[in-house]
Each structure stands twice: as structure tokens, then as C-alpha cells.
Image (cartoon, rainbow, N blue to C red):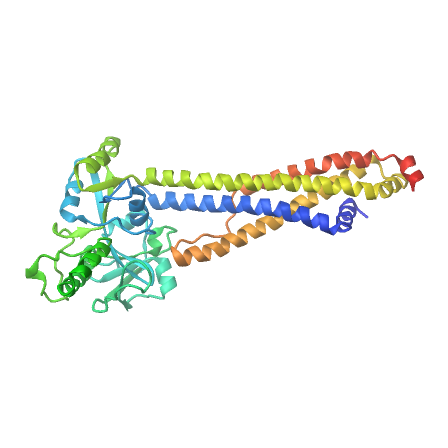
Length: 438
């Protein structure tokens, strides 16, 4: 019988203590691995989606909320800004290029975003089939949207007011038509329905006019509605000459200064602009400018405190599991000392006895690592399904990060040092004394 078989049989002889050590070790490994997977994928998605956007300009409020809403599309807007005010930013000498965003509706939880074709260039998104949106109510959809909703080229659909599924007002009078589908890019572009800004204006201009008429009969209701709709792109509700225009016609183009947009993505020409422009906007306008890289680094640092705390707890559990292995092997020596003495009589040298006990510690550690890795990756895969349904971001449990290799090396070290003292005691067994006691 070889050394590995002898070690396995010895562990099976003490199933409860072996199982306890295994569970403790697997628990520590699974928590550490899960934190590694989560932090790696979150940071990767943050960096990939921030791309090279220098500033996001929008309504005053939380700068982090502004970034999460307009870059990652996982939060609500802080409000709207006038196109006329946005023009001042666009025309500033520090600014190289800007991209307007108009938000307000969704289809099955996927946001309908009014913007221009430059948005796709940020994420190197390319057409898989069809042609880019051009006219009003034409859309280009991301790969995830096409896959999860079943929309295809030429299909029609209607938007829902708000950002949560089908709980808002249905704009049944406005039909969007799918003109193209994007190739998967692994960015937020996969999860968006793109159209022009004018289409979003047209839908909400009519919605606001209808609500304005209803609120003539209920003034208190008007206040509540106005507060709610400040989160969505609105048309110019005070232009009575346009109130009764045919709903099929476009009220204004993308550059109408009297309209509102949700935000402006800004690309700056030089480092001087990156330093001065946010301060100029925040101090001298009714808008705010947020730096995506700064806000995301701040968010990651805040998350990092919690992740570091949980990881430290997991390492503590690993240490406890190492002590459990140590105690288990040490206690087993008391019951196995006659067996070890007999092996010495039959020709086994001290080195073989030492290796047998070391292998026992390594078997528990490696088995705990394998079980822990399985649990963490299965857990991440299940969590990924939840996040894909709730915020449309996918997290995979099939991904392996290099830190898990370092974790395996740490596992081997813990298993070895947990077994080394029992192994030394085992190979130093007094043969004559032990057999005489028997």
C-alpha cells in the first residue's frame, strides 16, 4: 500500500474530525475566492465602461449618482439640464467633443437612451446586422437586449415611462422599430436601446401635455407629478403653439436649445481642462460636473473596506482550520502510536512516517481548497443570474483569477505547517516503549 492510500485510510478512520477540518478550510477558501471574483469583475466592468469619458455634466445632486446613471445606467437621474446650458459646455475651448444623453423610458427593464452615433465609438461597438438608427423612433439595440427580449430587425415595440420593467405609463401611441443589432462588446452598450434625442423628447412632450391637462383639475396632483418627472427627460410644456401639433411629426431637432437632456458626456482636449472645467461648471452654472474615474475610485475604495474586512475574516477562518487540522492529527497520534511503532518494526523508516502524516494534512487542505473553490464559483454563477435580472450586468462563476493560484499555494503552506509538528512527533515514536505498553 502506498503512502497516499495509507494517509487516506487514516483520515477515513476519523470521519468527524476530518469533516470538521474540511468544512472550516472550505469556508475560508470559498469566502476569499468569492471576494476575489467579485472585486475583479466589478473593477473590470467599472474600468471598461468608464472608457475615456472625462466628465459627465448633469443636474446638481449626487456626483456618484450622476455617474452610475449616465455611465453605467444602474441608477436614477439627478434631474435634467437645458440644452441651452449644455451648449455652453460644448462650445468651451477646453472641450473636444460632447455626447448628449436623454433618458426616461425602458423596454422590459432595458433603458431607451436618446443619443448620437458617437456614443457607440466610446465602446468600439459595431453593427452585427442592420443599419444604425437614423430617423425618429428607429433604434439600435445591444446584444444582450436582443438576446433577452427576443427583438429582431424590423420588430416594433413601445416604451414604458421610467426605468423599472412595465410598471410605468405605456407609450402605446409611439412605436419604435429595430433597425440594427450590435455585436457583443462586454460593455454597457450591450444593454441599451439607442435612438435619437428627438424621439425621447417627442414621447415625453406629449406625455407632459396630457399630464398638464389632467393637473388643471387637480393642482395638488400637479406638484406630485412635477417632482416625479424631474427624473425624466421632458419636452417644453409652455410652448402652446406646439401643443396641438400632429403626434407623428417631430417637434424639434436634437439641438433645440429650449429642450432638456439628462446629461452630457464630455471629452476634454488637455489636462488643464480636466482640472479647471469641472470647477467652472460646478461654481458658475446650475449644472454639476462629475469625473467618472474619481467617483468610481471613491466607490471602489468604499467597497474595498467591506471586502477587506470580509477577506480578513476568511483568512482568520483559514487559520482556525489549520489549527483544527493540527489538533486532529495530534490527537490521532495517541490512538495510532502502536500502529506507527509496528510500521517501524516492519521496516518503515522515520522519513516514511513523517511523509504519511504530512500528506494527511495536505489532503485535508487541498480537498478543502477544491470544495471552497467549487462553492465560490457556483455562488458567483448564481449571483450573476440575479444581477443580470436586476441590473442587467452579468457576473460569471466560470472565470478564474490568478490570485486563486496564490491562494492554492497558501493552502499548501497551511496544510504543511499544520501537520509538521504531529509528523515530527510521529516519526520520533519510541518503538520498544510503545510495544511494551501494548
